[in-house]
Length: 118
Image 1 (tube, rainbow, N blue to C red):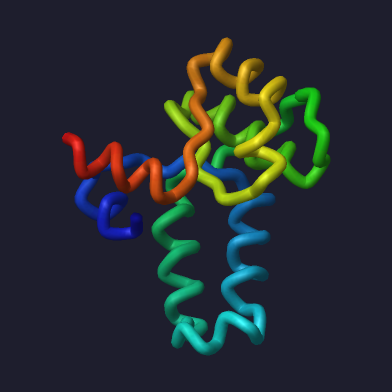
Image 2 (cartoon, rainbow, N blue to C red; image 1 turned 90 degrees about the vertical axis):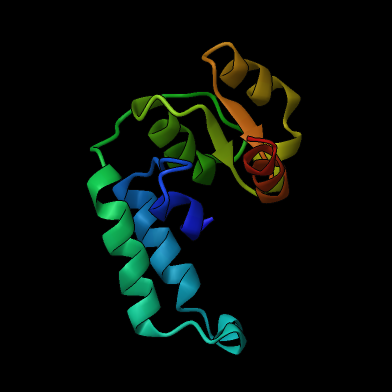
């Protein structure tokens, strides 16, 4: 997916809350086995920085930790949210609410399939 961003095939939309969460997750000890170095975390943040708006949107969500993801998608006028988070992927009411706003919810595999179809 990072290559797709670099090549301009997709445009990421994020928020400062999401950037902080991404950095925290990438620094977790259990991810060290993937060889993620501090420089990799910095590269991801540098890649996201131009896309980080200030986001303050009130939205109905089952899991409050998903609110920054949804808010960033709304503020950035995203076509889709890409996530493996079960609350986002399987919440039919939330997906319908997002589709009403022209935002789809895709798993990473679904996104890569769509990119391959282009």
